[in-house]
Amino acid sequence: MGSAAGTVKSMSHAENAKDAENDRSEKSFRGNAFLCDLRVLCVKIALPCAPDAAITPIEMSTSIEAWIARYLADEVPKSKSLIVTVFGDALLPSTPGVWLSELIALMAPFGVSERLVRTSCFRLIDEGWLTTRRDGRRSHYSLTPLGRRRIELAYQRVYTPPQIDWDGQWTLVITPRGGDTIPNRVELRRELEWEGFALLTPGVMIHPVDKHEALAQVLDELGLRDRVAVLRAANLAGFDAAGNRGLMLPCWNLDDVSARYQRFIEHFQPLLAKIGKTELQPQQAFLIQTLLIHSYRRATLHDPHLPMVMLPADWAGMAAYELCRQLYALTGANAQAFVGAVCKMPEQATDAEQPAALKNASLRFAGVL
Image: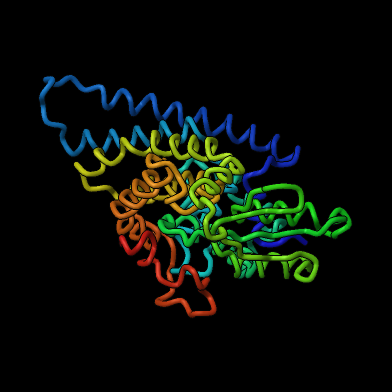
């Protein structure tokens, strides 16, 4: 069985043929529905007014609704992945799970039908994310221990600010000559790439950050701790550290990562001005916050998270993080109010029910809530 990190990354890989066919049907159905909603909203906001007339709160709220409808029509996020985002961002750490009726109510504003919620939950159970229990005719869904661990790994990257400084050292993972005979060799490389490592030369993968805990977990899960060498290396005195850094950077496809961040910024930057001029309704806040985290997660999980001192001064990842942080601060309270109104929340979850990295939601994005 693959490790938690690898299964998180697999969410961004191509679905199998059956999933792909279902996704095409889902995209067609939901896309058409949201295009209809969008046409209605566009008519609503096409109100005659003087060029310099002030925009009323009602008009601004309608403009936000139009943005939501346009985003959903253009992007059509997959319901299965969207449910993972809702569990990871909206439900943890407040509650260990929800009733099916509550989950259906949470997903309805995204245009996800009851049938799609049920189908997505069945798939997530098959993939080890969710577990279910019955109470009469009612079904209750919660994250499995493995599902919680997967979310911990993914959301550490989402909520944690970029690393600024660097001690000048490199982490190397070396497989010896004849490494082709190492079991799980392909999976090892995939896991290391998930952790941000890049292939320097055959048998040697590198990253500039001390990845001790992550590496220990990966190697233990794959049973390879005694089959590879893990080293920390530094430049010898008298050799150009900055020059070596420049030689290493091409090992990562940073152009692709930057493009993902730029796309995120283009989608969400217009919302800052819109939200700043009106008070969001709880459902609007929940929709925006969920789409915000869902979209940012898709970008940041491809980022090797190199120290900022190694990256270009105009690196889009920093701007994307700051934009996400600001919008999260603007939506957080009302989004939580919406979830609390829909779901029956326990007064306080126990430590056993909370992933360690998400025990206190107020710590997300350095405490913006």
